[in-house]
Image (tube, rainbow, N blue to C red):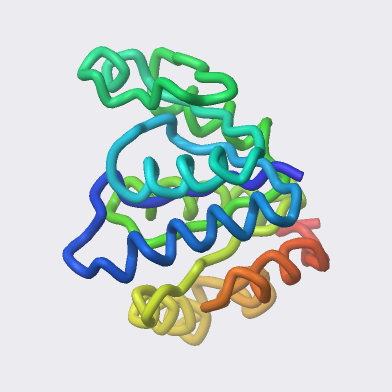
Length: 186
């Protein structure tokens, strides 16, 4: 299994985020799971990649040339694909991965997980999308997703398709047992 992880290119202000990213990467490796990620050596991206590599598993990075050229690319990966744009990055990561997980991060993380989630709703894939809700980081976002549903802009089954867990074991178990909803407009 290959899991795509979307997360911050920063470590954040709370060291618990980096600790959780490391624990998550270690757990993935212990379960024989490989990582697909944005290819950077910085922030939570670098932490989770290093942990998976240290656990002896494969790590596949996908990075736009403009970011590689700023010396942000991780040099110790199993494979690093260099692409022309962020659009190509997301498409290649989606093709490579069996599941998508958002760790704490900023707008780029939101863009990536929301696009993967949208593609799942539309039936472009049937892969699980999840939030690793470290220290309640995503609580307000998850409340807003419920508000979208309550306001009639998101069917409840598409809100429910998101996996939300605070422990790596529960998150990976939920990913493995995921059953996609009926795709939108079918």
